[in-house]
Length: 134
Image: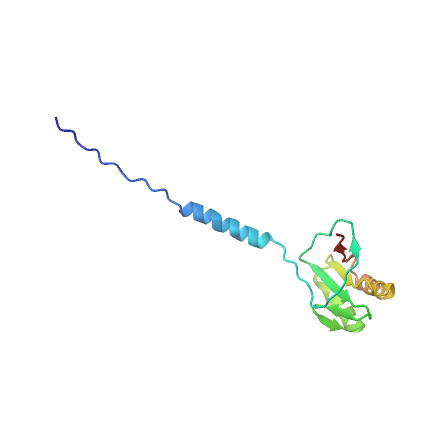
C-alpha cells in the first residue's frame, strides 16, 4: 500500500501590521513628550516643596538675573523691549502662561516689576519658576 504525501503549506505570519503599529506608537510618544527647554542663563532658582506646574507649549519665559537684567527669548532685553515683546505675545495668545525665572538672590522689586509689566501687557496667567526641594 502506498500512501500519498500531503503537501503542507508553509504558514508565515505577516508582520506588516505589527510594524505599522510600532511606528504609530513611536510617533505618538515622540509628539506627546514634553521637552524641557532651558535658557542659556545660569540661574540659581529658589527651592519649593509644592507640586511643579505642568509645562505648556504656549508659555513665555522671562529670566531675571541677580542684578535685575532681563532675558526674553534667549537674549538680553531692556525693559522697553520686554514690554514690546509682551505686547506682541498678547496679540498672538492672550492665555499664554508667563513663567518668571528669577535667581534666588534677585531682589524682590525686580520680580514684581516684571510681574507688573506682564499684567499691564494683558497677560493674566503668571508663574514663578522654582527647583524641587531635595
